[in-house]
Image 1 (cartoon, helix red, strand yellow):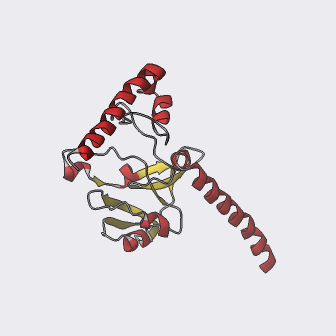
Image 2 (spheres, rainbow, N blue to C red):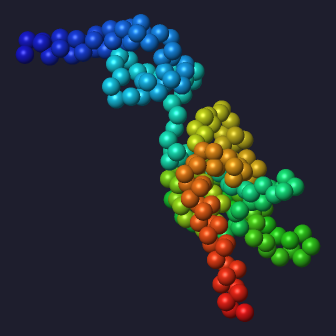
Image 3 (cartoon, rainbow, N blue to C red):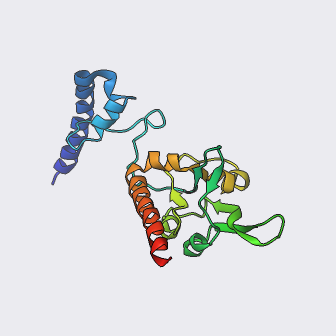
Length: 203
């Protein structure tokens, strides 16, 4: 009544404003543009203004953060890139906005289809970052990236990601999602160890 609500609201704003300078005096410039300062401002008991000065400062994203899909390949002993994708098309069928296009490769000698994509494209402007493609892939060949800085001014050339632009090594996936990568690798190793035993029991 009589404008006291506005006064109390402005007092809260002023208190946060003042707390910002008090925190600066107490902690010094360490609270800005350093990993320590960013982590301190992410705490629930932080006082003052907690704005992050992007792009000079960037909040670390959680491991389960997902943005655009990418194709995983395993690095061979001679530097070859063994793409896990078999061009089965499950990811394209599961994609809600239908932004994935796959062309199956063929043997250059016989012309018969092979289990590898000749082309793999994603329209990132249509992608809704749902992660269904990664969830339904039976070969762990497609995963969700953490890279969200992809703005450009040329949609036709920069926003249609082809196979080469989508490819990332398995080591990159392990670096951004270490927990998931370790769990999947353990499951893959367990499955591989059981296979010879099963084959030996049938002979």
